[in-house]
Image (cartoon, rainbow, N blue to C red; front, side, top):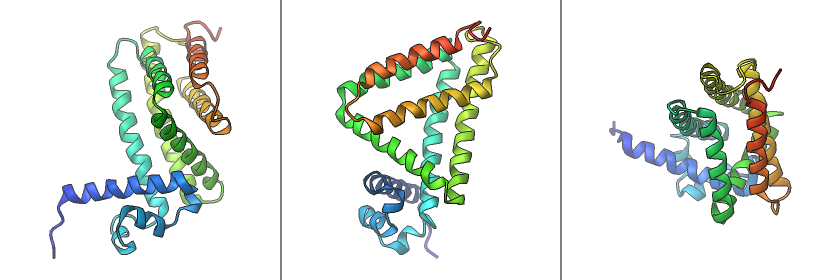
Length: 209
């Protein structure tokens, strides 16, 4: 039996995920076929099935990669003196990047469109629904942990339920993302500036009284 090189195996796996991401961004989850993905990744379908058994498995792996990046960022924020200010700084950084990097803007729009496709597919596909549920629960848990740390430091309203507040904030972020899809010509910087104001007012100590 041929010995598998773990480094090459992981690199090929990442290459397939990137190819699938491009296909999903172009044709949507339902429109992109396994054949399309194989063509984009320059591999046979038999080769692809060594790595992923279905499109849902590819989406789940993409979600896991996203969670890995999120965990790194949340870990970094947890070590900061003011994690909430860190979250706002990242939003402001995203705003400035969106204004000067058109490619970045296009990439972000494609990711948001894929997220909406996943939500739509979850309504009719139990496997996708479970992927979305698990991903959302983990992100919500990370943000809730960050909020609790800020509450312990007296940096945000201690009367807030951290889990509910995290869910509301994530829902707000998703809403802003949908605005990008509905109106590509919108002023993203203005919207993100107002989003930071909303977050500060919502989380400000004593704001829920």
